[in-house]
Length: 298
Length: 277
Image 1: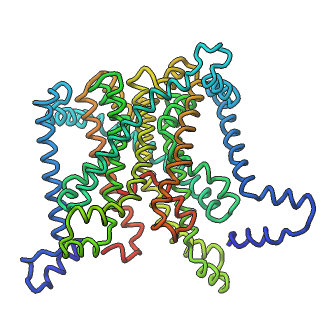
Image 2: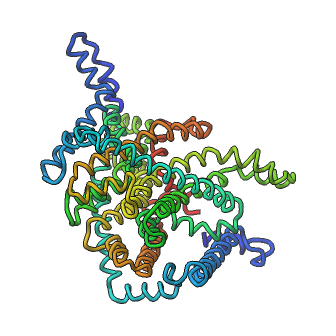
């Protein structure tokens, strides 16, 4: 197999010289990653050649710089970046907080009782599958423009992901442990404290991570349709003004935000919380697990 | 499921009076579904009548009538077919790219490092990015939703194929080599059967996300499909219309999930005996 081929090839390249150093560098992981970014930029540039309306990388980054620093606008629009993130983040945080509290509560109820599961599991799966755009539309019609619609859209989109993960966590508690605790009449709060909470913690972290990722999309969408400030609104502003490089600059900002948050904080939390479970897993198994955004429950 | 139920019930000492665990679970499932649905409709009626008012939350009957009109007028069939068609093209494209990428990732370190960041980041990119960029790039055309679906699904298929390759029994491959099996035979009888369940898992995972992104793409840049219809109703400020399409969408999605995908899974993996119990 080519795995073996690869290994012998790298092991066999022992002839010295600059050419060899170069070869080793080209074959290194770091070079591969750098190459992938160059490849993406190239794709982006090709897209801008293919379609005139699509902005090229350079002009987009120039625009991005102006949005962040104020640039040559002489400080008139200085702080656009901060201002809009400052109005989006509280809404986002509130929506996530509500979905965590309710999601854990609902998850514990559904996971704890067979009847509750039979009654509500399907509703939960439907909620899981509903696109955030539907909530964005409905909440705009229900609550009008403003914070309410945005917070509620974020909450409604993120909540089922938390609940489903908590249900999974509770159901992952070994059956023997549950039966034994019942047989020995362990009090409810003790069962909660010593059995359910420790088992569920990892799943709550995972649910939190998915809620953040899904909620970020929801908050942007809802701001796009029912707000007059915030990151989502600002992207729409440039989009409606036909200044696609402005739109793309904000796309980079909001993707950058969530990717950094996810890779630097959330994935690490999740990995830590699941250490006990995934110790045996290979790197690629772990990665497959990580990009699976909570849809496993379905 | 059904087979085990009848056999255990028939052989049990107390006959059919004592229901097996599986049968009980099934009864609980059906009852739960019925009671759940009934309770949901009741709650909805109460909320619409007494809490929010019928303008904000139209009663179930009105939505039902609206849904029936949509189905009867044929709008349902055309729009759903439009959506499904794009979804299929998108998945086709995703499989066509995802398999080779997954193969590269599963067999070569360099390529794995190359695709690593793209695959890991793809899941956290907000769907709105795909929707609007597709609109800017392709205008209002079928290409937008198709490319979006493909881009969203591809990483899942790729990483699952790579995971599948990772789990290939090395000894089996070595033995095949030792006994002089041809490479094509190894691919046909060892690699593909191992990878298939993983690839299918990738498809199933990505369907959930692909649906959503496709809806969104249709909302932004399409002239047919469910997403487009939902947007049209939204722009008419018609709550019953929006809800009617949403519920049709839910029904349809459940149908696809429960019947088509489950059947397909059963058919593809009919050789795995342990799964039939």
